Amino acid sequence: MDNKSAIITGASRGIGKAIAIQLAKDGYNVAISYQNSEESAKEVQKECEEFGVKAIIVKGDLSLEKDCENLISEAMSEFGRIDILVNNAGITKDNLILKMNIDDFMEVIQTNLVSAFNCSRFASKIMVRQRSGKIINISSVSGLYGNAGQANYSSAKAGLIGLTKTLAKELSKRNITVNAIAPGFINTDMVGKFPKEFIDEVSKKIPLGKIGNTQDIAKTVSFLANSDYITGQVIVVDGGLSLG
Ligand SMILES: NC(=O)c1ccc[n+]([C@@H]2O[C@H](COP(=O)([O-])OP(=O)(O)OC[C@H]3O[C@@H](n4cnc5c(N)ncnc54)[C@H](O)[C@@H]3O)[C@@H](O)[C@H]2O)c1
Image (cartoon, rainbow, N blue to C red; front, side, top):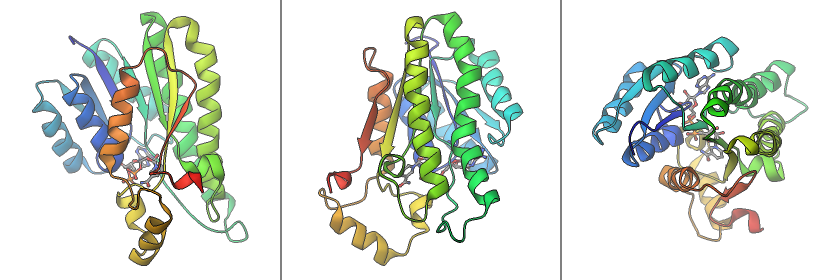
């Protein structure tokens, strides 16, 4: 697979890291976006390069439009094409609506949703010229079903699903697919914020009896990266949690 390339946002740890390594293993050159930890990003870069592909790291705060534009243009100037964009970067700032202020609402929308809009906007210009490409948005079951304490996060993740379906319709004529993955509970720093008792309680409610791991999401990204006839879909990866 000569010269194919992928951009993964927020790839210095957690789900983004697993996706970058999986796509490198699949033979893609990878652009690893990171916000703060250069050291972690370099470790991911090294792990990716072990699969014989090129890997670059690009620093940026993707809540800012200019940093989204810079990420796409750095990847483009290094690799000459963009085959896959994975919009993975995200944060939580949980609180009940009675205690959530507008700044906490907007920060989560800006980081989780507006960043995906901006990265998709800049990448799709290139994909349209190539007449091929795949955009994969990491949403959440919180965006499908809501979650108490996550008015900001579930709004952003539901917004990502709307963005996915709309871009799928807009870009289909140019041979570009756009899909979303909605993870349930996945074992990363994001979920590590919750007390162990809470995770144990949640695990009991998951039909498969455990929270997921980052590989479960990375393998689903790999599947979508290899699928040409799926677009506008949301793949739920939650161990059956949403079955109720
Ligand atoms: N872990 C879960 O259970 C779970 C469930 C559903 C969805 N998700 C989603 O999966 C994605 C990855 O989550 P994770 O669990 O690996 O979280 P994480 O906190 O471990 O990693 C998030 C990544 O996003 C990056 N990031 C955050 N803000 C950024 C910004 N402004 N600019 C650039 N990068 C930024 C962080 O640096 C980090 O690399 C997120 O979108 C999250 O909402 C996670």
